[in-house]
Each structure stands twice: as C-alpha cells, then as structure tokens.
Picture 1 (spheres, rainbow, N blue to C red):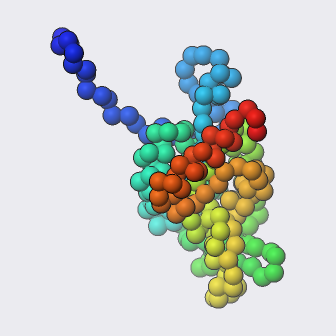
Picture 2 (picture 1 turned 90 degrees about the horizontal axis):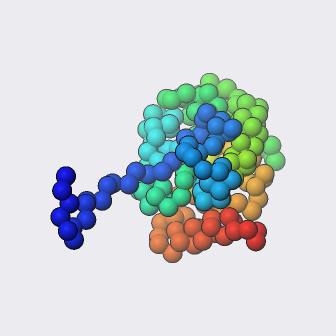
Length: 210
Ligand code: SF4
C-alpha cells in the first residue's frame, strides 16, 4: 500500500494485556527476546479477580466485568487473572460457597451440600500465593463481597444468620503474605482520583527505594 505523505496509517486497536495465571510460575517468563531481568523490570504486574475481566468463572457461570479494570487498567499494567474457586477445582457453574464461623475460626463451606473447602482452599492459597509472590506482583484488584476474594465486609454466617463480616479466604492468605502490597476492591476504583491514587501506589511499590 502506498502511503501518502503527511498521512499516518490508522492506529491498530490495542488489546488488553493480561497474563493468564495457570500454567503456574516458572511459566511466568514473558515471551520474546531480551534479557529476562531487564524485561521483568519493565513489567508492572497486578493481580485481579478473573471475573472482573469478564471471564465467566462465577458460580452461576457468569462474570462481573468491570469496565475500568478490563479496559484502562489492562492497558496500563499487565494483569494476572486469578479465580481461586475455579483453580481450586470447584468448576463452573458450581454450588455457591460462603464464610461460616464462630469466634476466630472461619470455614469456607457450601451451605447446600455442607461440603467444607477450608483445608483445600488453605493448601491451594499457600501454593498460589507463593507463585504470585515469585511473579513480583505490584498490586491486586479483588472482587468485593466474595468469600474467596473479598477484602472487607464479606458476610460471615453462623447457621442461617449473618453474624458478622470478614475477609475472603484467598484475599486473606495473600494479604498476610504480602502485607504492603497495594490492594483494592473494584468498588474502590469508581472515580478518577481513586484510580490514579491506586496506580501511584502500584508504581511506588515497584520503585527501587522500597
Ligand atoms: S470473586 Fe474470585 S472466586 Fe469468585 S468468581 Fe470472581 S475470581 Fe472467582
């Protein structure tokens, strides 16, 4: 095609950059030539609950796509999608689960069948968080209200009564291991100021002075 002087070719649409979680680390190297260390320095990775990207991983087979996370944020950083419940092997669709407990002990159970996933989630989270730690995350956007991903105000049930609120099982494991990691729920990113503040924290976390 002949290019006319002074006219630029039309810009190509820029795909959202995401980095699929599984297969697991080790598999985290980015494709392409160049020294791996140099490439890692350039890459800002932010973990994200997969359903926020429009992936149909929810218990009902749907998603909770968030336009900012799946759009602007995905263009500015490399997102690492994680769905703890699917990666745990619960499948989609699946029986809903919830946090249940009394006192300081929290369990993650499916109230319909009574299945208790507490120990499986604990083992999964321990391994997965280690992988994410090695990957060098600089931030995380969690899905609000989820018994796995919610950061705050997740309902905790005692029998059929909501007794209090707590933190999702996977979010809890990740935040315990990486207490300084900038973490938000998608509902915290509703306005421009909050989005920029989160991104500033993410980029500061990556700075060599940290
Ligand atoms: S909130 Fe977390 S566990 Fe639930 S569907 Fe989204 S990514 Fe999966």
